[in-house]
Image 1: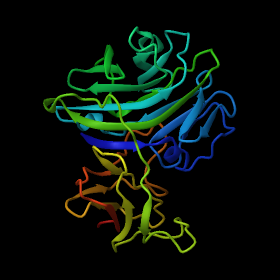
Image 2: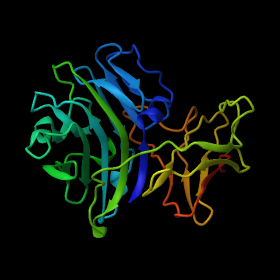
Image 3: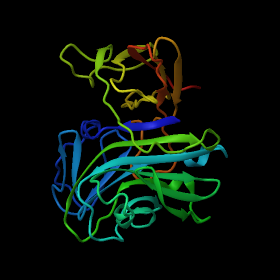
Image 4: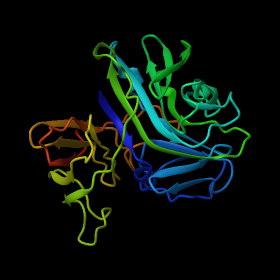
Length: 317
């Protein structure tokens, strides 16, 4: 599995948007994260401990797929998921996870609330919801606690660069608070077997040291240019399938490429991001041009630290 991103609720909340918030009726990108949120009423989405508390009658979360689905090989699929805690909603036809197609009001259903009310799942209030998109078979497959609950065809009219990943999107008439956390998306190979995780845990990695952080702890007064700068993290405390470092940046000097190198001291992986705009890396909701890359690695069992090196290249002639 190649991890596209993995976020805790805490990491999402610290990505740049203060929660709870008062904006309504608009899609907001959650800081520099891949996530888009929507509220139809004020302050119905809040950060509580390690989870988001979300009123499902008035708010929703989607993740950007960028250009990933259009670039998968015939053997690859994209799977995304989140952890849900709370009672099940009585509106059985409400959508719990989906693929958003072209517009916030058009989606392909992958998991409904009714899918969580099957006999062997109804006794639990802590579930893992996952969706697998297969661009070759053109299908969406929904899973609850690892059990397949639904397969939905993807019409030929759907373009891969115009979709978003539905993490929680019922927006039903019933007002009810739910707790969600541990958001991930990853690329799986069908030839390697199971293409979803069933259960997982995302973890924020604490910094050990950073050449980007000023003496007072502030990051945003430092810059990345042609010289490598490093940030060192401790390894996960829980066993890890993969670790991803999500790097985004302001681009006041119009540098054309951000190079990243992630190593555990034994092996390393690199990523190159060359879709800088004039203001920042990443684009607003609806833009289907720019992609996104993160550095990801499967850390060796003996690894104690991960080092992320960053370097920017000036525009090329």
